[in-house]
Length: 145
Image (cartoon, rainbow, N blue to C red; front, side, top):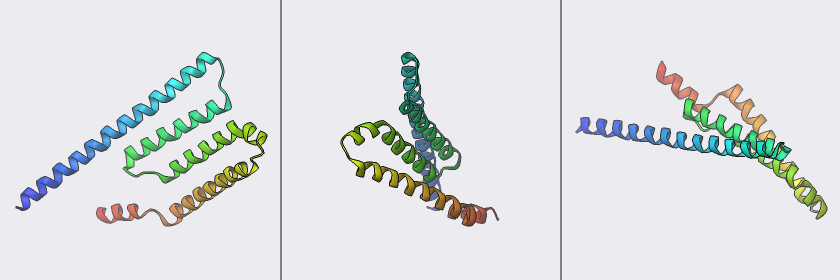
C-alpha cells in the first residue's frame, strides 16, 4: 500500500511540474508574441511614443517575472509591484491631458499616491528580504543539512 502512495505522489508531482512548464512556456510565448507585435507596429509608425516605451517595460517585467518563476518556482511579488507601478505611470502619462482638462485632479493625486505607496512596498519587501530572508530559504537550507 505504501508503494502505491509513493507512486501516486511521484506521478502527481510529475503532472504538476508538467503543467507548470507548459503554462510558463505558454505565458512566455504570449508575452514575446505581444511584445514583438507591438514593436513591429512601432517600427511601421516610424517612432515610439512614451506610452509605447512604457508598454515595452511592462513586457520586460513580465518576461523577468516568468524567468524568475521558471528558475526558482516562486512568484516574485516585487515584479508584480514593478508592473503595477509601470502601468500606473503609463496611465498617468497617457491620460494626464484628458484628466487635467476635465479637472479631475483627485484622480491624478490618487494615481501618484498609489505609485508612492507601491514604491514604499518595494522598499519594505527589499529590506525584509535582505535582513530576514524568505521562509522558503530557511526550509530549503534545513533540508540540505
